Image: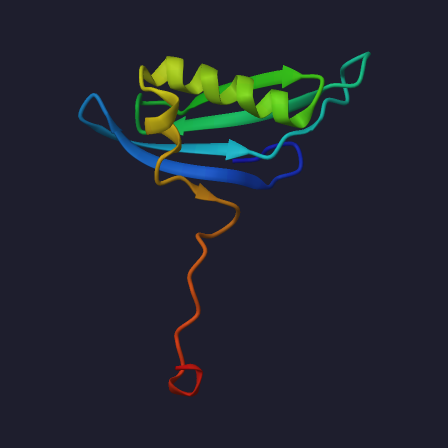
Length: 105
């Protein structure tokens, strides 16, 4: 996935209609083609159809752009926002707690 800046905000794998679907949400980035200040958020859906599905949302703030994109994605997949976001990996990699050393106990 490439999101304007090339970075990923979140990923989520879930079962939709008996298929394993990977959703990749790009970080919002400025829309260089817009006359007024705007941001775009690209969302990729892989595994639902033969070809990847590409969605894009646009709004005046990064947060609003992501919110619109998440709603459109949930509607497209026919799932609720809670199901879409549960177990999502936010950022580049999931956070893992560092191992506890014996000297820390």
